[in-house]
Length: 171
Image (cartoon, rainbow, N blue to C red; front, top):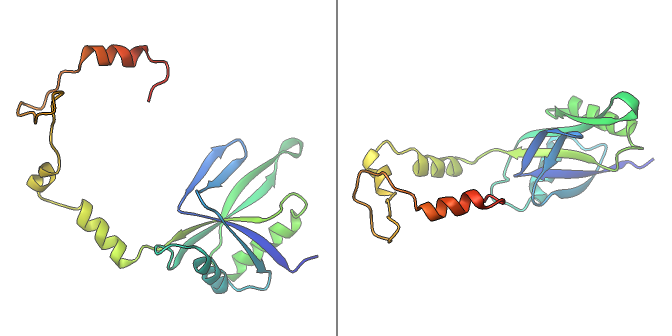
């Protein structure tokens, strides 16, 4: 029995809740990391941050573990649990060891804390109380490319509407 385990770490992605297999983690670039079972929770967070190549991945905010549950007829569904401390991490390792014949690796979904600079950028970009500033970012342009000075109502081109309705593959 090996004293190491392979982690598949998903980040900056999504958690799909109601799939045929239960919960599923997805992201563009998952990370594979081999760790010993003797690693501490703080060391685990450090290893993850070290290996994720992103400026946004400075501190781990939350870790979710995806684990299997046997349902009727030997069918397996996946659910999640938070990994928050040493005890929950040891529980994750125990569940993996029990299900080792079905699982080649442990799947984790990691969320990172936003830095103060990231939060300030978001506030500056989206939290404007000025209606004039909001309206100055948008222009209504007519079909001929000129700015529309009317009341904001735009009459659709009927040939475009007919083509859109006839098209079986919507955008």
